[in-house]
Image (cartoon, rainbow, N blue to C red; front, side, top):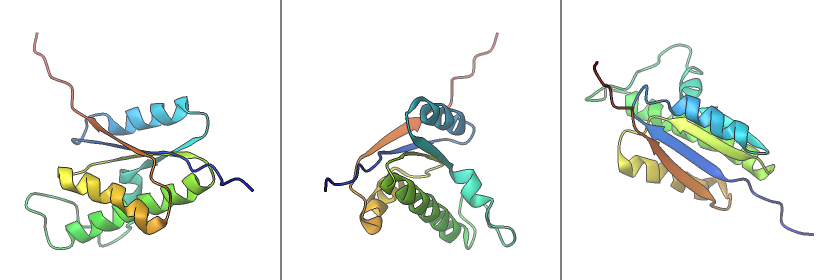
Length: 127
């Protein structure tokens, strides 16, 4: 029996309000079989006790951010095993963190087929 087709992972990251969610949704809609997993939606699962990220991070913020990334990767793994491409959009605060998120694929035992895209905020022009 042939191995099942594992979906691809696309991680779209960038600054706040750079258009990640819009781009991620559009990319997923252009693929033949895809899901869009929004990091902000993962954060909204925390109903009470949420600690928003700030600089410097307040106590508990990094732990909750790590949970948010892990939740997105777990959801993507389930869909990718079923043959869906997974498009994750989220804030990634440091370059090393993006690599760590993708490395979580090893923990979920899904063949690595990923692409990292960084969305930069558009330049603001004045008239």
